[in-house]
Length: 123
Image (cartoon, rainbow, N blue to C red; front, side):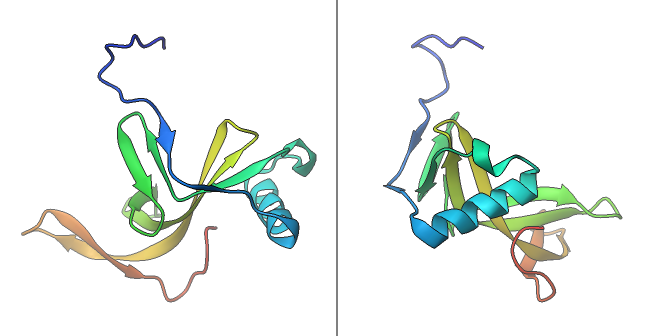
């Protein structure tokens, strides 16, 4: 979609960039490759971002909570944004730590979540 300069959408921008090196870079590449089923040799560059603003929504590491999928009972599952990676200068990966959905609060019209005691990082 071609957006003019008068678009209601803000430009995409991001916060401080860090370039992982050595073993950390290899670990990230291996994890992304296995999770997304892509060839590790196609990952030419990896940058770690503290925040990103995409189409007017700002995502901040460790401060953003996302609905990431639905469980078998059609209840939403949430995750805390733990890392943002940019691969090959145009693919953005959000890494989340899954949270346990406790229930829905009818007063607040919101789901209550807490750290999941049974899971580690993204599945």
